[in-house]
Length: 346
Ligand code: 5GP
Ligand code: MN
Image (cartoon, rainbow, N blue to C red; front, side, top):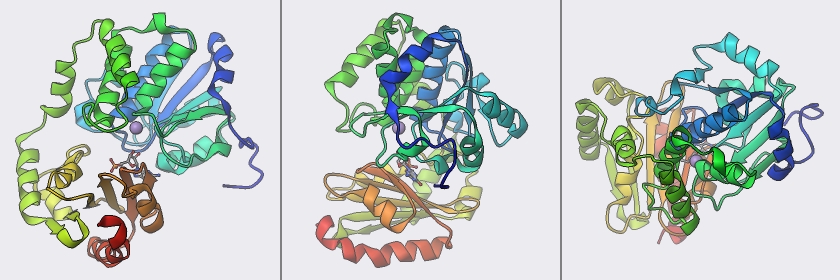
């Protein structure tokens, strides 16, 4: 972190301390991590609808594009993609009084937005559930790794600040979409009784959940299913001695099946469906880098694994990382370091 940057407070104040400021109409920006997923965009738009109702001037800026399967979210037409609208984004960020940072906790996860966020005079509010937040970058915030999703945290923010009565179907749809995707459809251990109580409250606004599942999971093109068949057959290695399954996808594979942002989401989870497999790793040869997705079951901590070996991080059972080596080199590196984790994997 740059020393002496005037925008970095020594530490972050509690989110409750921000509540009084909700009543003063302000210029606000909401942003999230690059290649936003359902939780990132669902929480951003859920919060957007809430803040608009309170009378603020609000814009959601995404650092990059997002998967097509999120293009139906209420309000998505207002979201600005920084990569295609740089000047407008720059202006909005420079003019904002407050910037909400959702579903990430280290500024570099916003990719090319990072220098703009660092330079912005706006105060920053963090709402996130990943480990090891860069607290000095934020003025107020809440960071809680026990939360199922950032959507759950935005819901808590709305209710705790005394605005339960403002919940409405658009808000509820966005929050439902994000909590549903981040909990693996209400399956992962972080799906607490509170999550189910929140879902009940969201449904009380009148939303139908089945069309949300359809829009996200049953709305792909044929080529994606053929691609999954191809990679399961040709690009998967099961390393039984390490209870690990590995998959790697080349640029040629992505081109052959015309794979777009979002088409590979969830792919890594197939590996964990093999009996006995506790660690799943997927490497994809993206444009400028090789992107890793890691998943685990039980005690194996993929957040530490990703941090230690592949410049990444995330949660204990779901993390990501990257490498600037070739696909072959990064996959070989993975195979070489695996034996040093033998004890933890058995
Ligand atoms: P995914 O594999 O779906 O891209 O990411 C899994 C989880 O790890 C998500 O919660 C995501 O936010 C986090 N994550 C993915 N890539 C990175 C990364 O490079 N750094 C950090 N700190 N977290 C990441
Ligand atoms: Mn999330």
